[in-house]
Amino acid sequence: MSTTAINNQQYNKARLWEIGFFALNNTATNLYMFIMMFVSYYAAGIAGIGVVVVSTILTSMRIFDGITDPIVGFMVDKTEGKFGKFRPYMIIGNIILAGSVLVLYNVTHLIPESFRLLFFILIYAIHIIGYTCQTSVTKAAQTVLTNDPKQRPLFAVFDGIFVTLLFTGGQVYVASYLIKKYGDFNMGLFTELNITAMIIAGVFTVLAAIGISRKDKKEFFGLAEETVQTKFRDFWPILKKNKPLLKLITAVTVDKLAFSLLRHAVVVVMLFGILIGDYGLSGTISMITIVPGLLITFWAVAKARKTGMKNAFLFSTWTALGTFIALIGLFLFIDSSAISMSNIGFATILFVVLYTLALGFGQVPSTLVNPMIADVSDYETSTSGRYVPGMIGTMFSFIDKLITSLAPAIVGFAVALIGFKDAFPTVKDVLTPELKLVTIILAFGIPALALTISGLIMSRYELDGAKMEEIQAKIAEKKSKHTDDKEQKIAN
Image (cartoon, rainbow, N blue to C red; front, side, top):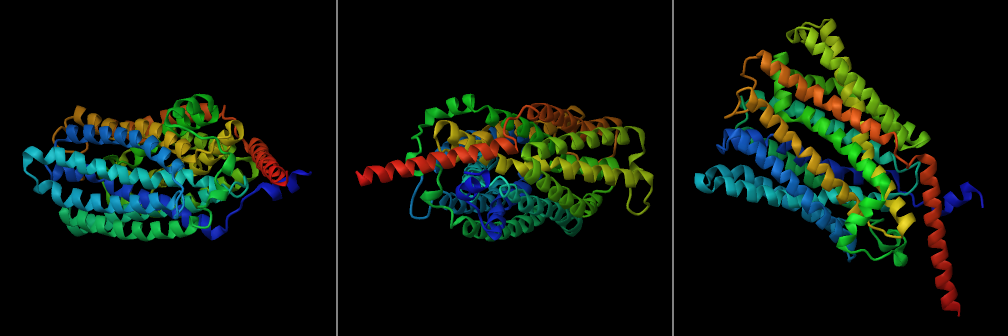
């Protein structure tokens, strides 16, 4: 049988709108991640919790977030009810997220001071459980959405568009509208920001559930009846033996650490509000980067469909690394106050170009990671017979969160070292040599190092385009053999 004929038989394809709708599940959880980027300002400025304490709590909660991932992933793999395997976790997770945000931002500062810290930690922990429930589905359900190597990367197109619009529009909304309306990070700002995000995230979650509904059925779950039964203790053997998973996890987590620092609310304030001297410029720059960022994403997905996701990942990583190195040089040798949209010169043009390329190519690996995790899950099914997308996806999330949990701690301790022990830097602080150096290191230096590590690891990644076609053919052959054996037993 020709490869084309095999492919026509084996591929489970999705409708384009189903891929687009399901991508909104990731957008919904990213909305909560975006608004929680500002929780440091609430905790320190309104709830009265110290800067170092807040940074330590956020780091610890991120680790707790990682610990909950394998548990939820194992539960997802064991779930098979009237409403499918994935949709219950999407809806329940979003409800928990909304409720916890309401309580966290509206009640914490009213609690007696002696119990405030404990209350903050408790509600934040509940928030994380909801976040884990919903995010685990984004990775795990990729396996049932589509297994066509040419179609699977299309998720990255929708996800890239939605994430770009979210973080760009969100930054403009906060920096150019809310800050001007409320003057600073205060209760009025937090209330409007959170309610807006909760409503939008709720709508997105419902649409995502509709998008996956046709595929959230047993016949799309791996090898169906033949799937090997897995126990919780199998987490370690799977991680140990699945080399593509281990490499992908390591490469993407250090890459995500880089962009967790660049997008951290405090680092954005330090870069635009203090180093450049115009916090509103962060929103303007975000608007400027929308179209180029989307074009870069479209190009990367086209490359992934043609040559495989590994090649697109590597090219984007090395390109982003080059732009970060150039940005370090730019801020070391120019007067940063010369960057201004009201007086556009060489420095402004160069910064906009480099920053656009850094964001555009830098977000490609994170955009591709969800369909790439589905590839790794299919690799596991083809080699061991196990269909464990929940375990594979949350195993990735567990290590991912352990590494990226360092971002709040890195920022908190870095600014504390230069004197900001009781409050984070704000747009009202004056630029000092120490503050300039720390800003450059946090925004560009550490990300450049992380991208170097990521690129070196992914250069040894096994699952290229040709390998994935081979894997899907192997899975299809196993399914066909299982069906034939079952029919033979019935006939006998």
